[in-house]
Image 1 (spheres, helix red, strand yellow):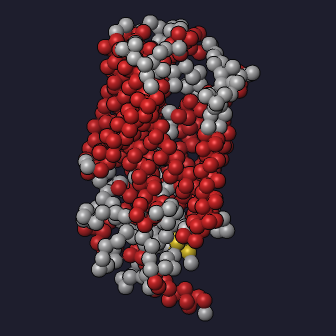
Image 2 (tube, rainbow, N blue to C red):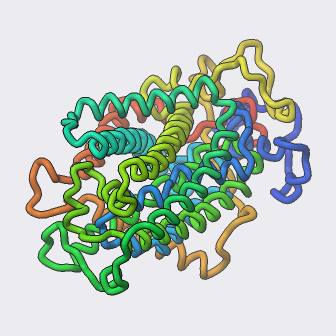
Length: 499
């Protein structure tokens, strides 16, 4: 009897036309964007965003999100910069393999809902969604503060009597965010073009700074670079110092999953996103390693560089190398421009992640956060995947009446065009998971001893607070609203469901 009731509930959502069948390869021959819409429909979501990004623009977006060689400059003085780039790259292949099975903007919380044991999938998916959403919002804040304080460092370089105040850095931070909001709203249609141009700027900026630095700055010896070991945190052992400092390397690859959260705006996402992530790891990893070596050879006296009044040792390295405030200012301005471009990408990624989680009712005020403006016409190739309705509304907006029992997505996963085959894939995934646990453990340690209120690493407090709040909210209200990734009623006939 219950099975019959479930079938009746399911039929309320199902369209009259038969579902589309076929493998990924069979679908790939269909007209532009239809394949993407079908793949998304099988995951339970209707296509509501325009797919403006191709591979090149996505590659630019991914590269400028990571800004690896630029971040390397910010971590001058960290002796672990040349260590661990390979394991970081390998860990990113987990994203690539998971994504090509389920190319959707929700990313991690959606995959958790699919792969976790049925008994715990809703709770684990909910916590993952909160952590991922807040992590990207925090990344946006961090990037903005980073750019704002570099600008203050430039002012100090040119005006030594300038007394930098924290509130001034805050105002600069808000100015950075304001520009990012403008690009992501007023001229959002130009974002793919902008990201393509930034990719060119990213590469040319690296070449310009590298040549200038290596040509003009005095060089240290190979023994200074590869045999000199620093322990600026006053840790009792060098091994402990290395593990704490290792997190500086991880920071140069933060944001590898940005392309994942943009997937519903990317053509042929199941192919282009893994390719973009892999290509980004190769390009940014290579340029980041080269920049780390160049800066270390041109560092000079580490103690004097680290004590610079600008607050950023790389600015002092630029000045020492060029012996010109104008030259150092231009070189630093390149870094500022590229870091500012990364903030634009941070905002784009954070907004998509938050929107995706909200459409599955994972956040407070999800009805408002998940709304999509209806003035942008949907691509005509997706019309046969959408069930026409008399009044527009967000696909994941809460339903009423008989529609309240909206089923959750549990698609049948099959391998797509990108994977590490056989035992090598298993080895890679096991290693990546161990590496991630290692990184998480050391990311909570303070940078130096003794730990004080000023130098304390508060990430453990923030992460614990987010997890604690999300658990409390889950049992207080979220458990009633969040059922897991929902299936939009317009595409239910295409989706695998779990009732």
